[in-house]
Image (cartoon, rainbow, N blue to C red; front, top):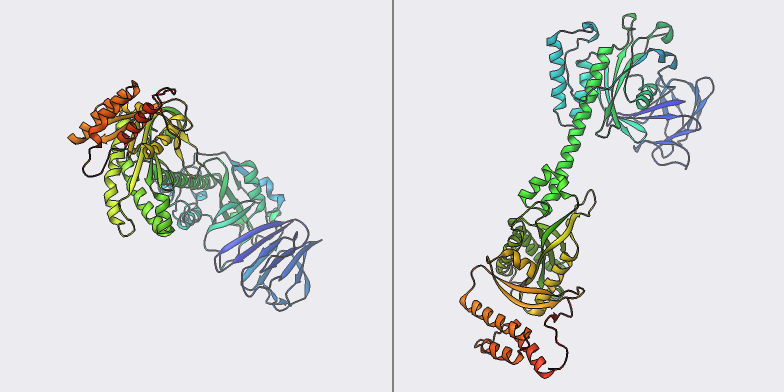
Length: 592
């Protein structure tokens, strides 16, 4: 099996690959299907530049596929365009600025008997220190030295996880804290490894490639692997031979996402002892600290994501509670108050203004309405064109949820004049708005994805609230609440009972009330009392009396009439004309 490493000095990036059989190609563009290839992104590399194939006896066959560009060797000779040459392994070649090393896995399996493993430790730590090796201190270093090690480990752990400095500090600690000759941080990418940091900088230095035997053993055993000793008979010449240690970096799900890899150059007989157990333990602490840092980064990223999602829908107080306890978003049965709003005449307005001006107008309106919902601790559930849906009493308890919804609705109407004034150059008058509010049981939860939150209520209560908003158009009032909401707001608002109705798609009749406000004018109170007396007469089949009761409301000097009163008179007159047809005191609303 070949082990190939391609080094790009521009970025310092090293790409590694194991190749078992058949040709392996190199070039600027993708090659033929089924033939593995390294893509070398450089204008001085031909589209198809080199093909390698392993031969018996530790030989590789090198074919220059380029018609113009050479392949250079370390002895300054070249393989000319179109030339084929056999080279003894290991071999180093250069294409443009790319350095390509080819060899068998440099870690001879005959040395496997010297490998040792460490059991897992808690994942804490990181750092950098002096050049004094742990081996020289024995197995019981003084307390001051231990304190220095752990202080440095914690210092690196506090750095920004995932940043280049984070990985570089960890690689540096392998050398300066532990006393090895080389420290490398590898990150797992699919089935391969990428070098995230190395110390010392590897760009201008020749090192043996990383041992795939060690990497595969770490993956298989999921623990720290280190070489405790090296016998001279196993290595022959010590030139380029290293003792290594590798410790896995785990993510929050206990999956290996990287490695802390350390090496000691065995350049003389004094260093044949390899890696000591205490040194391997500190490398393991560094890897554990790196994992803890990455886990912290993952948690922070998740918190930021949740916070950005929560702030789209919830008030600051609710968002804070949900960050502390996201389980509040789990599905639950609750009594809620639901609000639907809809801008009046929007379709005609959109046709006249065009998409750009319409979008600006709607955005301004929705921004203000959203602020009002949040001001009164509501949850913005959804937007649909010129409409909005909001909810109270979920995910946390709000004993006065119906009152809060009504306050938010009235505040939204207070914003209409300012919105109309801001866009008066586009409008022919003032914006109109209809709002329907209902209270009742619902299933509340998140039906969005893991990356896009959509939290809201489901069930009959929601459907009825939507129909009530639609009824505002037919009954000629801007704000309607149901009898269920009316029961929960007490006497805090002035209301007028308009009728008992059946809305589209819902069989059971429901009482609807006009919500006027907290400080009604005497004239409105007088009109309410007259209307409610007439409604009682209508439901008692006293249709002539209805007309007499409502007659004073028709004596308008300015030409403005109370639309519900006109509707009620019309229904009473119709009954007078058709006294023998079946009578149902509940009004049938024919459309949404």
